[in-house]
Image 1 (cartoon, rainbow, N blue to C red):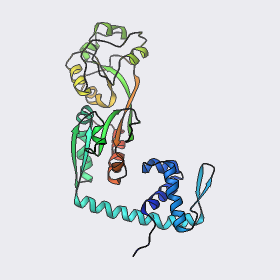
Image 2 (image 1 turned 30 degrees about the horizontal axis):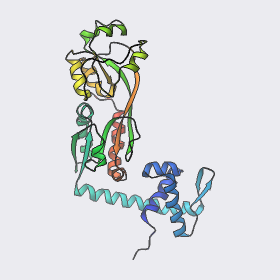
Image 3 (image 1 turned 90 degrees about the vertical axis):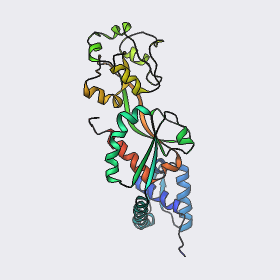
Length: 291
């Protein structure tokens, strides 16, 4: 029979040694720095050896810790590789809850690229802007526009966004200054308020109380492209419209918006294959691509 320390203590030890920090190890493992410290203390007690020197807020491997890491890390990597291979062979389904506009205008056109290198992985997509699917276990991962924290969930930033008004080229030709918006229908969305942009453009205006209101950014952009008015948008969702020339920015004024995040329940955040997908999303967001 194998006599081994608890696996979660080995994982915490490897992460802390790699990061040189209980804080960063905790962020990776979705636990507190104190929990990391407790796990490593349990491992040290089990071994009867100190693995780290704790100096102020810094940690350093002891000679015994460095020697132990040289054996533990390759073993954990072999276990992870073998497990990942078996899971791929068995096939997996990643359940993604995605905000409709983000799914339609950005995500779905890119999933085929990920599946080329992960052919056994299946995707199950559902449209929602709520957090419930991740909280009730019906989704492994959510893609949301907003600002964390979201209690009970881990958030991994995909992008920071800026907010800019967009309209058709014909409508833009009639707008010489931001004040010209006084005579134009303004399209509204609860997560894209007009007042911050008004202030940045030098307009002391209240939030508009009339004009079509949308709870889906893609519908609002489609309405703007059809000539219904001026819409505020974040860049990630507007790329295809700007590239096609169906929408343009009438003014060179933008304001900081919120951000897009991958939102995971704790059980999913601890799974390497899901974290791999999140890392791919983070890289893909930074890669320009024609929609």
